Image (cartoon, rainbow, N blue to C red; front, top):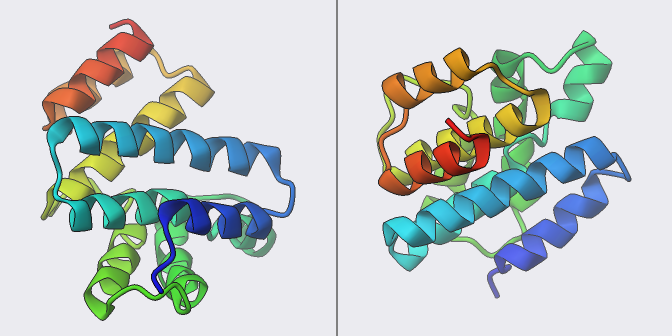
Length: 164
């Protein structure tokens, strides 16, 4: 039986070992991704992959903090892809679903070569969560809107939440 998004979330919360910052961030990203995906009308399979990727996208952050002393985006991508594969190995996903989630985790800080709505929405949701958490200046938000955002729902949420 395939894990639901709620079951993936429950497992990820346990994996987060009480790190409230990481937990808050993954819940924000998942919520924004879920919302944008539903508003954009994604098909159920793409929505599921998007939500799974949003939940586990920062799985490598604890390792990166320990190993490198920071959570640099490129290192998160490198370390996170194999970690996501191992974490979700027993989740009952199809091979295609699992490989797509792993791919997204391995590219969630890469704004080039975006090859699907799931990828696009993950970028937008992660940026929105990071902007909320870190108080990005208006200029940075506007540049992201101009250069990266491609979904109407993502643009609406970013403008609404960040008041730009």
